[in-house]
Structures are given as C-alpha cells and as structure tokens.
Image (cartoon, rainbow, N blue to C red; front, side, top):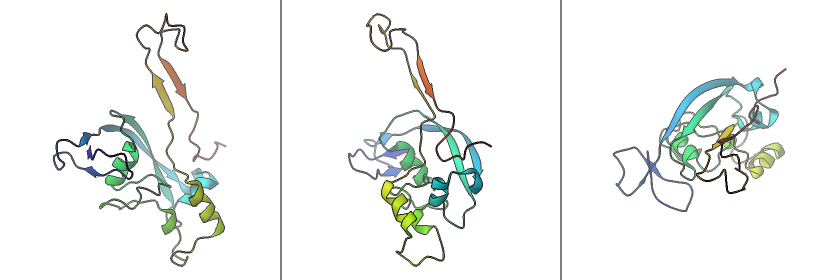
Length: 168
C-alpha cells in the first residue's frame, strides 16, 4: 500500500501502483490469523462486537515500516477494520467485515445507543495491542551507562491480549 503523506487522520491509502510516487510506502506482514468465538472475548470486547456477529479475528502482524496509523489504515483498506476503531471502520470501499459499535444491534433505533454503548464509545476502546516489542542493541550501548548497558537486544512481552477472556 501507499499512504498520502499527512499529519491528519484518517490516513488515505491506495494500492501499490495506484498512488503517486511521492506517497509513502507501507509494508506489513500478516504472520497468522485466529478466529475467536464471542465467548472467548472479555465482556468489554463483546460490547464492541456487532450483536449478530459471533466471532472476531485476531492477527499477528510484523510491521516492516512504521507509519502512523499504518496497521489501522491498512486493515480497514482491506475490509477488516480493527474492532472498536471509530476512525477507520467505515472508511473503506471493501467494508465487508467491519466491526462497528454503531451497527451492533439490529433492534436498536438508528442513532440511539444504550448507556453501556455510549460509555464504551466515549472511552475509544480499540482492540489493538503490541504483544511483543523488541529493541535492538544500539552501537556503543554497552559503554554508555544507559538503560541498555548490557549491549544486548531487549524484548518485552505480554501473556495475552486485553480482549481475550482469561483462560479457565
């Protein structure tokens, strides 16, 4: 994908070869995708999932470039916006698997949300979380006395995503 250089969100994307050359290149690798059933989600994540939808998808992504909003914009462009993403969920031509709080229940009147819906929307919950982050050893870091004094790569990892219900 290519992204229009801009400080504003939402970011504008085009497919490679369909954007001017001055647009920024965005690359990411989808390493794996898992299906999560509704009951495998925390109550907070279940509130974000449309009522008629019984499953969500969880992806492992490796960023090759680190553009602002890159993951959010690219997934939405491909028709798979991130659960709870109020900025990108409806900004795609291929919006086949959008997960939108405003489209949650067929029985709700248009524009009317329950108190819980409004609270979650106000908080801006987004099902996007770095599960692992890796910092390469910097040249000279073994002698600079800083936090990377070991001169070794640093890795920080989480056990599970906040939207996954605790294992039983």
